[in-house]
Every structure is written in structure tokens, then in C-alpha cells.
Amino acid sequence: MDTEAMTSVAIVGPGAIGTTLAAALHDAGRTPLLCGRTSRDSLTLHDGDRAVTVPGSVRTDPAKIDRAVDIVFFAVKATQTDAASDWLAALSGPDTVVCVLQNGVEQLETVSPHVPSGRIVPAVVWFPAQTQSDGSVRLRGEVRLSLPDTPPSRMIADALGDTRCFVELTADFRSLAWRKLLQNAAAGLMALTHRRSGMFARADISGLTLAYLRECLAVARAEGAELGDEVPQAILDKFLASPADMGTSILADREAGKPLEWDTRNGVVLRRGRARGIPTPISEVLLPLLAAASDGPG
Image 1: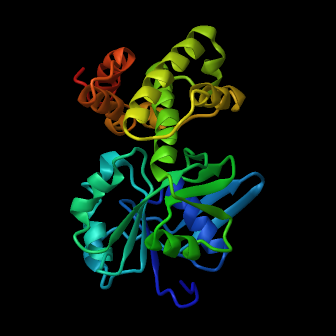
Image 2: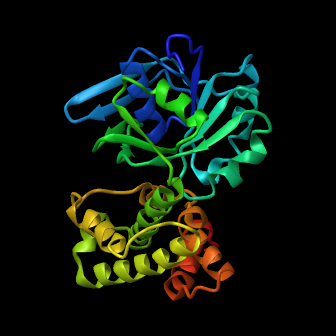
């Protein structure tokens, strides 16, 4: 796709992920249309000592969108999909590509009912970005997306060409998606403990994490993911190598009293495990705790 000929790109959900992509596009001279719940005059991304300000107010009324766009980056959390569905209806036409920047392995099933026309591309997001108390976003690593190797994905890769966001097209997207899910599932422990990455240095927590990741790995393999025995330890090692104060989105939601993506990130392991007859004893304990932490009552 010729990026010069592309008429429009929209980002729905200018949170940590959406702001990072908006800044990448803006830096390359392709400032996107910004859509969200809260009106703002601009977005700010902090990357080391550099601050990128993305101009343009955040649109808040889907009814005021008068035409479809070429590409929608759908960056709301899975818990917000239904609430943001009006944006998908307003922005999508038969030629629109919707790139779903959500956690989990069920993006197509979740978003497809809201996009009767257009094409949906699931994505794996690999960059650590965190929303700050003032609404800005702090980026703490490289910006990378993994997409299935399909024609719509290649449109997205072209749209992000020459930006700081590296796009990987892969023939085995299922395996990458499940690998990221394992990482996100383990991060759920941070929401339960109200602790950041430094907690994984505890021997008891690292032992629990490794056992949980091995349980998740068994389910991932049953679902067709080709992941080696080394993956659980590699994911734990990544947590151990992270700055001790590194957080995660599910922890930020817990601290803010928001609903948690417990079903998307953790519940899927239990559901798919039960469906395939795979024992998931750790999930049987974690899921009720995460669900109660998210939804109450009490």
C-alpha cells in the first residue's frame, strides 16, 4: 500500500498503546485521527528524555464521524470493547482494516460481531508503555507489533513503514499470540499482590510463576501453539531482568479500581484447559481471586 495515497488512519483508545502508536505515526508525518471517551487537546509520550506531543483533539462522539477510514487501530482494553463498538461502526467500511491491539488470543471472536464490514487483523503488542498520573505515557522499550502474514496485515505494515514501530509478519501467529498470553497470565500475579516486577525475585513467587507458566504452556500446546519447554523459564527470566518498579496494565487497573482483563488474560487458560481435559489446578485458584478483585462484590 502506498502510504502517500492512504487517506486516513484512526486510533480508538488513546491510552498507553494508542498513544505510543499515535506518536510513532506523528513523528513520521502521519498524525492519525484520535478517538476516545475523554476530550483532550493532545497526547504526550515520554521516551527517555524526549517528549513527543501529538496534536489534535481527541474525538469523543462517534456520531460526528462522517466517513470510514482506511485503517483503525483498536486499542481499547478487552473489557471496553462493547462500550467502544460505536467507534467501529462509525469508522469502518467494506475496505477498512481494523487492527485489534488487545491482549489475549480471542481478538477475532470478540471484535468480529462489531465489524460486520471490513477486515480484522489480530495483533501482539510487545512494547512496555505505561500511563502516568498526568495522562501522559511513558515508553520503556522498543516498539514492536506481530501480525499474521496476510494482505490486510501488509497494509498495516505499510502504514507503519518508516516509523519507529517495527512490524513483524509471521506465518505462525498462533504461537506468538499464546506466548504473549503466557506472559500476560503471569503478570496477573502482580495484580493480586499489588506488587511490581521486583516481586519475582522472591523464591516462592518465582516458583509459583514457573509452575503456573508450565500449566499455561500445556494448554497453549493443546491449542496448536508450537512453544518449547524453555518458554516458561524465559518468560520468568524477562520479569527478573525488568526494573524492579516495572508495572503492567492489569496492575495499573487494579490500583485504579478499574475492571480487570482477568478473563482475557487468565480465564482463557482455564476455559480452554477444561474444554480439552487438561488439568489446570493453579488456574482454578487464581481465577476466582482475580475475578473477585475485579468485579467484587465487597
